[in-house]
Length: 189
Image 1 (cartoon, rainbow, N blue to C red):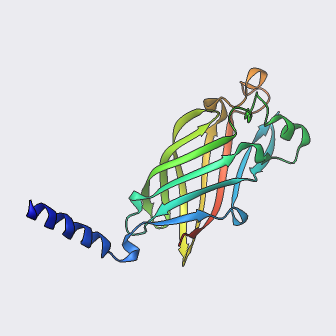
Image 2: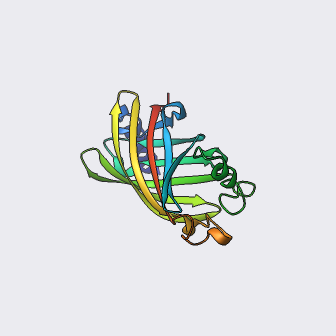
Image 3: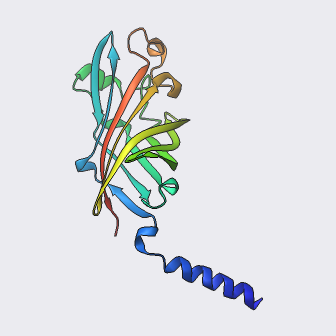
């Protein structure tokens, strides 16, 4: 019995004595210095927009990047494209249905190293209550207590139920949506 306690104490001590760089650090997204943009086509004409409100945390250890995780929550009501008619329709029942689904959530459970500063976040994206597995390719740079992440994801909106009724096909609004992120996060104390 004593040997089990001794082994447990040694394992705990070894874990506590790891240098700070060997432990995952938590980073808080800085929305004021971050952008979450989207683009698509309506009647063949390109349009773009962004989400003005999103927040989240990233757990990342450069010595063990595969153990990294991220959780990002996006306020769907904050979508804006600069077109009054489109912006008025997006929160509605046919599109984001923010009355029932106010947020979209991206949860990355692990990271894959691609080489250099390139990675992939493996996780799930939930929009309108529909969760799908996604792989988000991104680059990551660390500068002191700040990380900078840039990534791109192609989605098919109908896979998440975005665009109901007359909008369910790509006849008026293309099914393909491009999502681009440019995120700055600060190390949590």
